[in-house]
Image 1 (cartoon, rainbow, N blue to C red):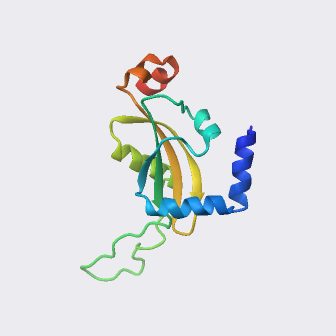
Image 2 (spheres, rainbow, N blue to C red):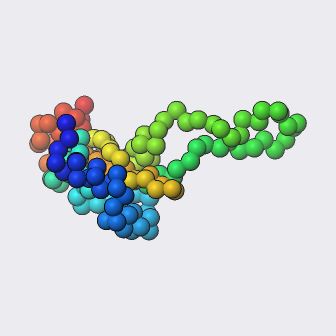
Image 3 (tube, helix red, strand yellow):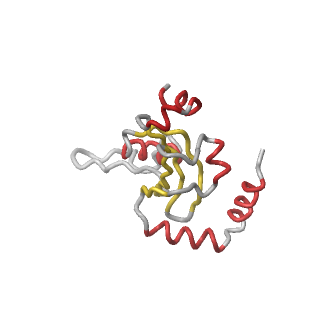
Length: 149
């Protein structure tokens, strides 16, 4: 069920509002993984396990659009079906963003992620991570079950 906050975000996103486009311009200038203080979609983040406490980190991850392309073979004869273009990945862009974030932040456990914005070149997702060694996380019963399990 969508909350009022979700409906406002959805309306802005569907209408491609100037506020979101202005934010996307700023996001393009930032690195691919950018740590932010608060999630942009707080209701969605809370559903995924976000709490405003130490040990929980929100990362805005940027992933390039487009499909896969294999390197063209150099030696040997040219096959009729090279298998260079039209390659399909087994994972969607959100899973790519999650995996890349996990590779970069190895000491943190992922709680969840959600879609943020898409333009012609990039997808943006916000990934919620928790530090399993942080005392605030180990004392919280709900988070301890999810993070240490």
